[in-house]
Length: 488
Image 1 (cartoon, rainbow, N blue to C red):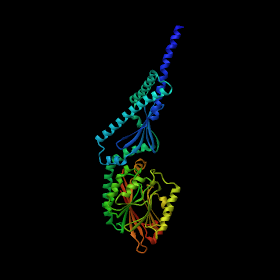
Image 2 (image 1 turned 135 degrees about the horizontal axis):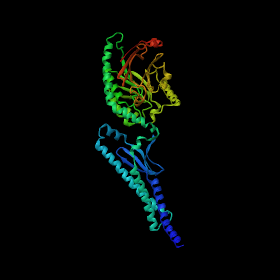
Image 3 (image 1 turned 180 degrees about the vertical axis):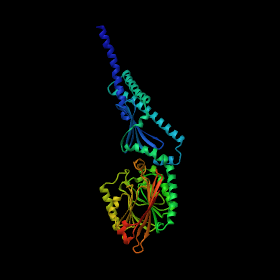
Image 4 (image 1 turned 90 degrees about the vertical axis):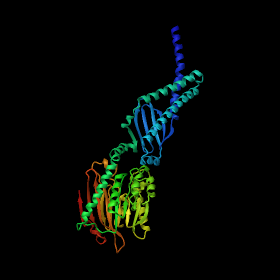
């Protein structure tokens, strides 16, 4: 009987400690989960760090509104979440472009991140202590001993979870992460870095050298009749879909220096994601030294459109008509260029764009000489009504004549960017040199001939094709126009 009484007393004493410990541990974890989110700024990055109690030890990297990347990095039931709030694109770009993102700056950023982590862990430990004490106070454990027991339990439990997280944390787990949202394309973006950016200097040099050799080829062709370069009052370089490929800008620059066109007509999609981090590509365009007429594509975005509008030699057409060298050019920006999403416009947006173009056409006394759009669906109703149509988007080069209209699509001057690297069949760099002549009878410009250039990067070959177009009086027989080509 005495033994049973002693056991009950022992159990009662243990229970008197167990309850405060349980209350303190639960209260501390709840307080950490609710109040842990805290904002930080390190260099060009602004982000919020938080911790939650889950059944698996995941680390989540959240990039609103694109989605998240997560990996099971540790054994404890703590889930760490880092949410990107802001990126100072100008600062980040300036650091990278100016070459200032060296070892010293990188060490400073790493030290800043480490300091952030220490501050966050200390802050959450304080939250656990406060939560344990607050929980004890709420349930009536206000005597010193049970109150301190609750606080100690909260500290010990959360501190143990933090130590377990640190001891088992495996950063290599992000080599096999899980993606949600738009970030499901992240492996594709890694491929861009590995297969494109690291080789871009070499690629640009090869394309520039190849473009220079094309001049020699054309000089030899000029000596042969009837393959001599056709006479023209204006020579227009037609490009499209550069897709953030600096090698393409080098290629265009060499073509401009070699063939001396009067202007460039660009059907859009200079960038891939429409971010300011891609803006340095525009600097190469400003160095061309000739008018660069561009209509935004679906991959542009408001930030890039604003930067293009500031470029000195860029004539940006978002909706209206301009005149360059006497060539009247009407254009309309792709509907998606006003948002951060590169989504292809739907049928209703295309229909609205066509109605806007019809209204612009009706306002003028006579049709423009050129219609410049990104998506060819916008141009379809105007074939046969406007002398020259230039479009892009399809990544396939084509030359068509419908009635008195010559329709030019240069394919993709940037070889589709990273998409070209991921394609099963090689996507060539392509552009068109269009020879324009003004009709003395009507005063309208029309295309008399084109030289299409396709450069195959991996096979180090190129293909040149010259096509002669019938004049206005024989437009209906355009399909019988002469075609001469040479390749290597």
